[in-house]
Image 1 (cartoon, rainbow, N blue to C red):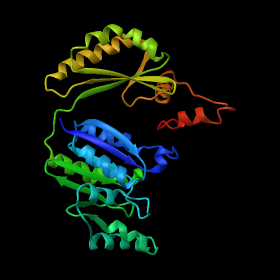
Image 2 (image 1 turned 180 degrees about the vertical axis):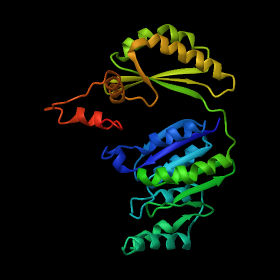
Image 3 (image 1 turned 60 degrees about the horizontal axis):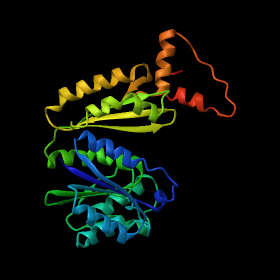
Image 4 (image 1 turned 60 degrees about the vertical axis):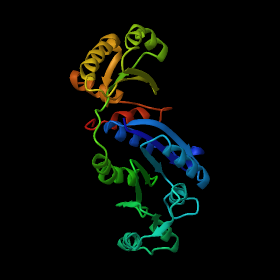
Amino acid sequence: MIKVEIIATGNELLRGEITNSTTPFLLKQFLSLGYEITRLITIGDDQDQIQGAIRDALGRADIIVVTGGLGPTPDDLTREALASALNQPLEFRSELWEAIHSFFQARGRKTLPANIKQAYLPFGAHPVPNLHGTAPGIIIPRDSQTIIALPGPPGELQQMFVNEVKPYLETRYSSPCSPKYCIFKVCGLGESALLEKLKSFLEQIKNTSAKVSFLPREGEVNIILQVGAENETEDLFIQLAEKMRSLLGEDLYGLNEATLPGKVGELLQRENFTLAVAESCTGGLIGNYITNVAGSS
């Protein structure tokens, strides 16, 4: 199994000033490839800490991903930490500097001297094109390992991963059997009540490759069933998923991407009902939940 560690950097993450939406995105992407996520950490804008985290990860993981810290300001220290961790110098790439110039010129803006730092990469690194910003990503192959650095803004990171990084990894590593998993979404019961309901089921799977985890969310609980990545797990997965569905019964409102507002919409359509909401203290929250479902109007 290919092991992945993700290192998210940024003081703003540690202070809770922004929500880290890039790590959940990467988790889904790596799980879809059949890779195993072994560690997630968040550290501040400290070169020594980033460098140390990369070196530690190299002792355990096949793929190390560092997010954030590729901008032009003094607190963007990921490329320097990478170079130091690998004992490699930073080298200037003229083609990257030209791409940065072109990015600003296309928007009628002047390239500032601070941006030149983004044209430097650790020696031997491959740049990852960034269509929405000035910070190129970084891919560094190292024997059987791969180190990847991507910018923090989700809009930049996501397109870079899907368009460039994912195809690179699919070429570099043989595709393992993906683990089978399903998210069962329950409304109306808390974790402890669900635990009682599934107690015999949890005993049944103890000596199998199956795992069950509980994820409380606003107004509901998600139960994640995952069955290992071996070829023979398909039948086991189907059997356990059917058993789980039967045990949850009417408390189960949907699977995987299903949402409570979406379920409400299904019920309204089935009964040919419309919905009106008058809100005071909720300030439009219920209306927002409903209208977030495509076609709700």
